[in-house]
Every structure is written in structure tokens, then in C-alpha cells.
Image 1 (cartoon, rainbow, N blue to C red):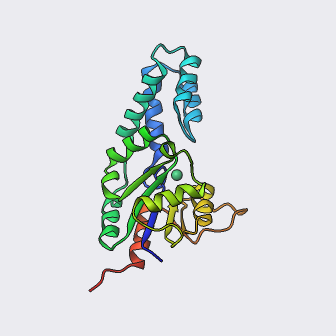
Image 2 (cartoon, protein in one colour):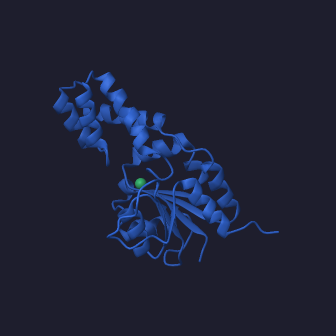
Image 3 (cartoon, protein in one colour):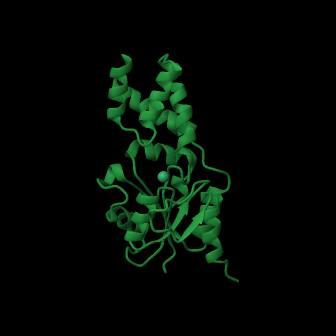
Length: 219
Ligand SMILES: [Mg+2]
């Protein structure tokens, strides 16, 4: 199997949920929303966020700031709030040294995802980044995995690993694309109705260590 690993971004390499909570608190403070309204915003942006969400929030809360400016502020706040756990950047570097090709395959809008990748230093540690908003298809679409493999100089169809937290988008999708799958489970149980992933790790760092253990340093 070629040394290829595709990694999801949100809630795999970075903790999007934690960053989003901080960003929504800032949004609520800035626009003087009540606690209940803040919860509503958090719920709306919980799974994913796009410009249309901010147009709707602007309408709902009678904000005067244009939706485009709210969106830009969101991208900036996310980039400032997001953290990459200790050891992950070094782990990616160690994989590169051992000959792994590494790409991030993430669903989301290009501007927000790239702002987070730059701010955390992840963009500089991988060979390539594929963002669904720039490609026009999303995981679990097999084209996303093929594009990510190609983008880092690997060959789709010659195997590799897919690491991610979403059972369907990352794991079922990755397997359909011919990849060995590693689920970032955190404390959750794998959904009983779905075929199991090949491996499970609680965090991205543990997943990276598992891949490093498969490819020990030579000499
Ligand atoms: Mg994810």
C-alpha cells in the first residue's frame, strides 16, 4: 500500500466545536444577543456555516452590518480561535520524513477552511489541501478522495489511509474510495448500524502515532 494519508480537518485535526463556541460568544457579545439567542446561533452554525446563514442571522436579529462583513468576521474569528492540539504538527512532520504523502480533505467553504489551516500552521505541514467549496463536490463523494490523493502526488486506487471523525463522510466515504479507514472516535461509540472502520483512535495525535508505528524509521 502506498504511504498516503488523507486527513479530515474539523473535529479531527482541530477542535471546531470548541472554536465555534468561542466565536459564537464573540458574535453574541458584539451584537448584544441574549443567552437564548446565542444558543440559537450556535445551533444554526453547529454542523456547518455559510454566507446564507449570516444573511439569515442578520435578518433574524435586525443587524445593520452587511451579511458579507459578518461572514468575513466569522472567518477571522474562527482563524483566531482554532487550535491544533500539541504534537500534531510534529507528528505530521515525522510522517513526511518517513515518506508519507499527506493531504487534508475537508468539507467547507474555501476562505474559512484555508484561514484555519494557515492560522494553525497545518497548511505548511501537509503536501496538499482539498476543500469541497473550491472543488464543487464533498465527502463522501469518491471524487473528493481521488482529488485529494492526486493533489499530493499519490495515485487514487492504490490504497492509503483516510482519517476522520465523521462515520459517513470520512469513513464510509473513504472505504468506498478504496482507502483503509481510521476513525477518530473521541469518547463516542461507533454507530452500530454501520460497518466498522478498520481502526479507531481517540485523537488525531494517536492516529498519527499509529501510522508512524506502521512505518518505523529505517536504520
Ligand atoms: Mg470532521
